[in-house]
Image 1: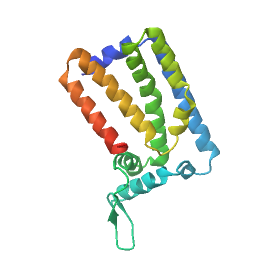
Image 2: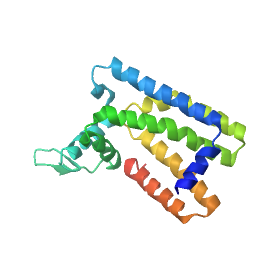
Image 3: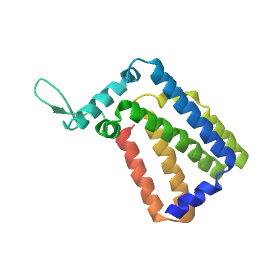
Image 4: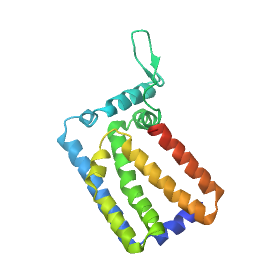
Length: 194
């Protein structure tokens, strides 16, 4: 498996790696600016993110996947457990929401252009693939969404990664890669089922 990844990395053109670097600078620089400009990292948590973060805090505090109520802790039945679990890992390890935001921003800035390259190159020409990579890097909504505690960016990253691995599994007829695709799709469902 390690040699497959290494061979795949060496087949990616230098222009795509330049795009990944530009994406990292934009994502991390923008997040750093936003965190510096806001007084508190909790200002980046709003809407659905409030529910995910409160569940993550309860998970990291040892209360399980529950919400407090007057009758005691009640199991959460509205939100899926994937994103709160992912956030709770960073809260438990002491990195907090800032660590989670930097992790999601960095992973999305690297994985999305590489997966777009892999998918576009499989279906189209190399020129179209390079254009798609640069468009994915320069997409402002992707930068903004990676700075909030929402499930969209992890779902996009895992979906693109699973499609890329599925194509690799199909071309090589490798059942382990097909199994990895199934695991990733399962993770997507646990983060955002609809």
